[in-house]
Length: 374
Ligand code: 13P
Ligand code: SF4
Image 1 (tube, rainbow, N blue to C red):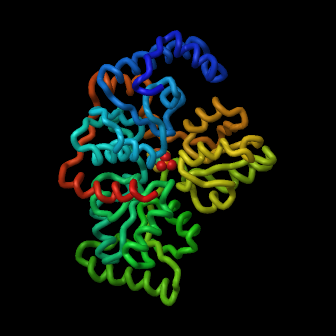
Image 2 (image 1 turned 90 degrees about the horizontal axis):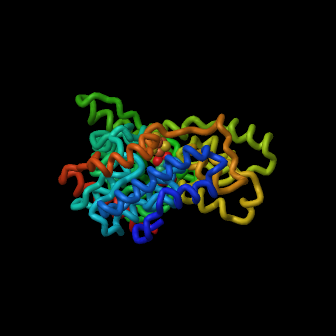
Image 3 (image 1 turned 180 degrees about the vertical axis):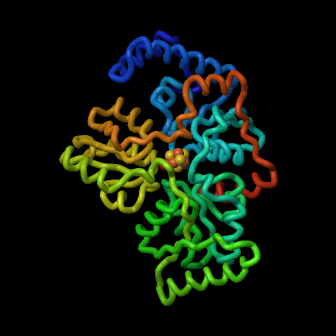
């Protein structure tokens, strides 16, 4: 449904839900949800809001019956620059809503829960980036978009899972160097580095302020000696991890192939590299969803190694998508979004995302660079 279509009644939403999701929920639950969706859509229309929904929302938010635009982090960042609505309700986590606010300083950006953080974003701060820049002066800094505005304000360019390699290639070319600082996701860094045939180094940033200069020099020397004489690209990385994707193991893929011969496995590149080595395709949430339409994938059982709400929605739509519960994982931060908290967000105009102007202005350039890199 788009913001311009006639609003559906509870009965019409219920009928559509029954057609699509009756295997999922009993009728009485579908009826209640249909009522909530009707109420939510009315509020969206009344408040002239736009809803941006990440692919990890539960099916009752992700579904087409809820007004809004669905996508991965990169797609939603782009959509945030295109909307003319003055009110953006972001169904995702804080760093995503913050990105929308950085791009739209005059608009009101809401998120249904301030508890919707991210283990990657909280693994690093702006002060950490300053330390890394002191260790490796002149080296371009690429930050995964899963970071707070404080971190983004210190970096040169952001990237998303869907364009990480392209962004690194762009930064290396612009800075005329073969070294890049890539943070904070350890596994994404390892996966992109492996893809590019690059070396990787994790500096020790634990030194106290007093020994900082000596420590910075030591770390620089270690990186140089590791890389000496090598024409290879060098990634200087960070130890952040996604608390959901780090749980997948290569054994999950091996077991799955035994039980479902011919299974096509897709994984998010936040999974460890040993896992990515065992799967058929790695990509952003949006890329994985598009991939399911490919001819050679359609005739096979399909499994996803990613956040499990995305799989729930896809399994309802595509009969060949497996719901393998033992390896399914739910992000507790994404799970803060549900029909109740989303309705309350619009009713009470909560929770508003604010970014101090000094930080916002500095964080905007790296985000705009990411969006411009195609
Ligand atoms: P995408 O950018 O692939 O949508 O992923 C965001 C995220 O948080 C993955 O855990
Ligand atoms: Fe962060 Fe992982 Fe949750 Fe994505 S799934 S929001 S990376 S904790």
